[in-house]
Image (cartoon, rainbow, N blue to C red):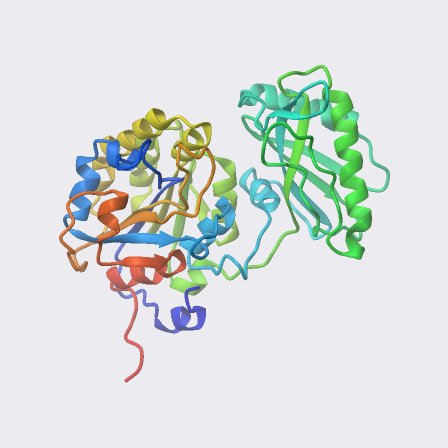
Length: 404
């Protein structure tokens, strides 16, 4: 991870340089056939290519070589946090993302509405990506219908098929296994305690699932639930403390706003969901912050759906909107992904993530194209994602010299 003691000692606010970290979720990919081009390499990206021509590029790995990361640890690594040491369940990130007021008596879980066949096997882990209005209605039904003695229960809609489940009570633990089998054709898994002290919590969560399945039985395609990422509210050092930065998050999906909130970023509210809408929101708040985290989700969504061409289209829409950001002349512009989600695999993967740091202080490495094959030859090499923040700070001249 970034050496927090060093970051605290060396960061300086004397230089007002602005840093933008643009994260295309699940950016990395694979070709459709051996020797072909990935989604990023297929996309027409003249503006992103021009960044490579005035920057340094490489491939990052979020956790460790060969390890496939979830979105939570992958983003924490981008912000300089050790994703193994700071292992945070996705439930709390989803809850914070919708501004749910968590207490120290809460355990949160990320929920998916899913589709079950008559035998109880999962046929769609995302219930056909139902619309948010349907999610709101179903959450209200569960809130009214599920009753578990001894705890308060909250079922809050997030977006599309996602919701947050929060149980509030004394002695609850988050060391629980998940119900999502991660594949179709199998039934949801029973929740088990990973420590004896979590046995009661497991029983309560299993009771929620059982009651929820009965209430949702006639609601195809959303006739089941999957629970993941059980978590209590953690305590992390904030990015302002570590880096001396005033930080803002521009994100459409609530979970990423929650993750940003966890590390001390302020949420930028805006209308719309396109990359252009997000870039305009950052530009509108340009004078208020010196670090912007901008998150684009649909690259990952289409990768998980196996839609190669749609993922290409999202990358191209980012490139077409990029002049909105470039007009603000950020001192450092980092473009990367949190992990790879090849459309051919339809899931997260361990493959390196194309990354470029564009700055007047970057050492140009001769690349003129933004893509996996090009970044493999870049001057940044193959590096841990948690080193990215110190490198961005250095390129912004916001780190003092270490030692005499």
